[in-house]
Image: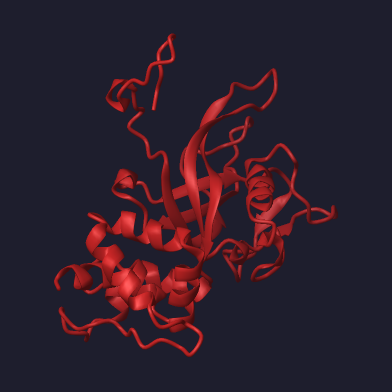
Length: 253
């Protein structure tokens, strides 16, 4: 909440907005290296970007569903795998510390030290990011005295590691179950390790939370509950914000 010069709290409605997505939780559900129209270097050449698709975000996201990070010079996209980069010179496969993608890597490792050990284990393979969930904010990025600073969406907190399969299921849950009846209950059979009361806790939380985003955030922030959900194999249903998802079904009574 903003405060005035005397330290008094001011309602957030007095703050301006850029109209761009800001201050939300979202999962990286897909990613690839490529180019986008309008993204060029100082010589006018197309820039290679790491393009991350964000999913399961709050309503504040609107139509915005991707964020891109330039990788710097000396790289080219692998023709067989859009998530993989290869060097186009003889230098080691390392990113320039001033590139936006390295800034993303550096931030990710600070917030989630296990990041380098996920999936491919390679910084130049975007499988590294799939299934990780972060809190995102717009920040002013400084590039040095000769380059104008600009705002960029960046992760500011690590929320959860959902795994690549769960992220994919969560982003395509409606399409993944086309033959399910609209009011069919999700699979909620717990594993032996999941605990006895987690379903009751989930149902109470679903009723308490007025939006799916609030429900999902509450589940993921509760480490024991999130662990039980993953062990029970119902994470995709928890992430599903359609009428077939756990949140909607629990609120139907």
